[in-house]
Image 1 (cartoon, rainbow, N blue to C red):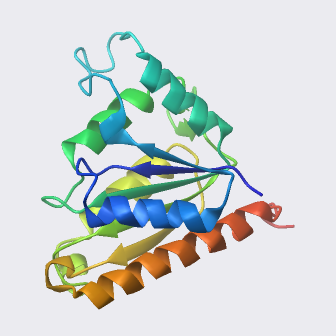
Image 2 (image 1 turned 60 degrees about the vertical axis):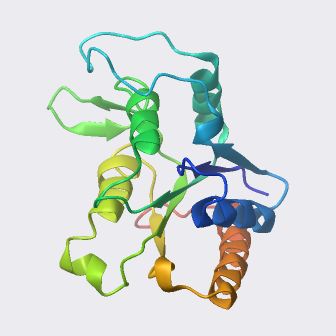
Amino acid sequence: MPRILVIDGHPDPDSLTAALARAYVAGAGDDAVLLSLRDLALDPDLHRGYRAGQDVEPDLARARDLLEWSEHVTVLTPVWWGSVPALLKGFLDRALVIGWAFRYRDNGRPEGLLAGRTGRVLVTSDSPRWYLPLVGDTTVKQLKGRTLEFCGITPVRVSRFTDVRNATVERRAEWLDKARVLGATDAGAASRPRVAAGA
């Protein structure tokens, strides 16, 4: 079975996002690890930006170890103000630093250093599904393209759970079932050898 890291970016353990993360892990099997960011002890701020280093807390070092260990990374987040919660943004700022998650080549082009992994972004939103493209689907673009793919994780699939505020108990139960299926599917897909482009 592949090694799957599941990153729960919601600050509330009783949220739908957190429940979906637990269901996804249950479906993915024994080689899936759930990393709930709200449980980590780390400073989310890059106090000097990328101009200077910053002490790496034990929880951040463990999170990086898990990223290196993983073969597939799934990030779960709500859509807040067209972005992600500060908790998740701060984690990404601290964890995915230059020289570790990416670098710039001599020609100035970026190179992702987390290549060889697949990914999934799973978002929850109070807005209906049709509304997200109208406002640019910014959360997905940020996580999928500007973050995971930028760091070399590809392909990155996307799953959306929308109109959450109007969802019935039955609908939420269906979503949890879907998350379990997605976990099982990703575990199976990630375990198959990847074919190089042009092969």
